[in-house]
Amino acid sequence: MRPEEVRAVLAHEIGHVANGDMVTLALIQGVVNTFVMFFARIVAHLVDSFLKSRSDGEGGLGFMGYFAVVMVAEIVFGIVLPRLWLGSLATASTGLMKRVPAWQAPVRWSTPWHV
Image 1 (tube, helix red, strand yellow):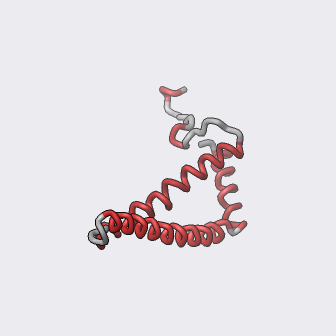
Image 2 (image 1 turned 90 degrees about the vertical axis):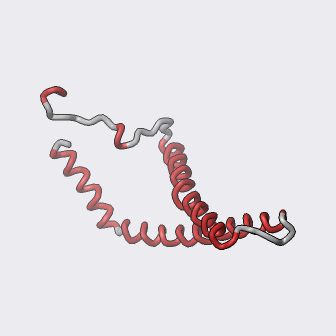
Image 3 (image 1 turned 90 degrees about the horizontal axis):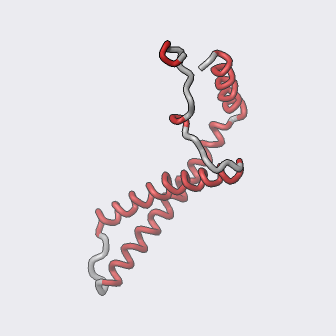
């Protein structure tokens, strides 16, 4: 990166710190995690109840099965769905149809073979 690009990025990040964005995002993440944990356990309970109803009250998930369903649901609710939702929200709000990840962005090299 050129020096003026580095200064712009640093100024942008310092602006986040000055606005208190870090504290706000930490609080929001705590609330989101609470809902993720709550709904993951509801899903595990529903799966357990469904399996018990199919086997006349016997069976179900058991402790390890319940724990596994909770973990998978927490991953889906806490990682996969927010990324999909935020990605579609960002695309819709900016009007961009194609997003380019940072690792695909063009890089300016100062080596002789890229001059």
